Image (cartoon, rainbow, N blue to C red; front, side):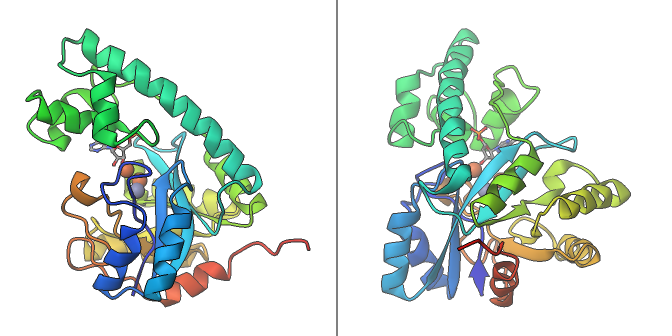
Length: 284
Ligand code: AMP
Ligand code: FE
Ligand code: FE
Ligand code: ZN
């Protein structure tokens, strides 16, 4: 089995990048992808540790896009390297934008009278790199302003709530283009986050396939067997790879574990081979 969706302390996970392959090995995974939000900075450390453990490390990241649905849209990119190719450059711009957003978000929450400072959020994240809303949520929980991470989102941080501050997003088709130009592949993450169903979801998936997407994340940690089957069918219909992963974030999402998700996840090794077969052929 494998896991193609995990986060480390490089973004909003709580395990350092080198621990992800350790957790994968313990779970019995032959391969694991590190897919931090907007960053490839953990790939080196994760790859070294993975090599020691005999686990294949798939380099990747997860990019938030302007959504084509009602809900949010995330795209996973695989087989891309840090400081190489046009995607890496674009990620640097997104990280700068995220940094500015985080400062505005601190000011916004303080203006709502909440007991939170930017320096507390930096301390919670262990540095200024890779700060995301879950870190703000954790500070609010520790300060007693929310009961849980989810409660902090529901009260303040989610889109439509009083503390929401947007960050700039790429167009999904631009992510696919940048991924391909960088020698990688793009996969639609947790498709039900789009909050589309039936024919609407199928239409969007068809458009993504036509635009060069390689797959959709069908075997997702938080999806039911029925949902996984429906998404796998959708993937087959558009000749896409039905990929899968846990979306492990450590204690930020305590219900999701590397490899097994909520306990019932099992992504076959074949999925990685199918995805590798979709890599662009690069000019020498
Ligand atoms: P950011 O990239 O800083 O905007 O934060 C994105 C992170 O926040 C992702 O890891 C999501 O899992 C988490 N997140 C976004 N919206 C919600 C929500 N409504 N409830 C819980 N977590 C959320
Ligand atoms: Fe996250
Ligand atoms: Fe995501
Ligand atoms: Zn994720």
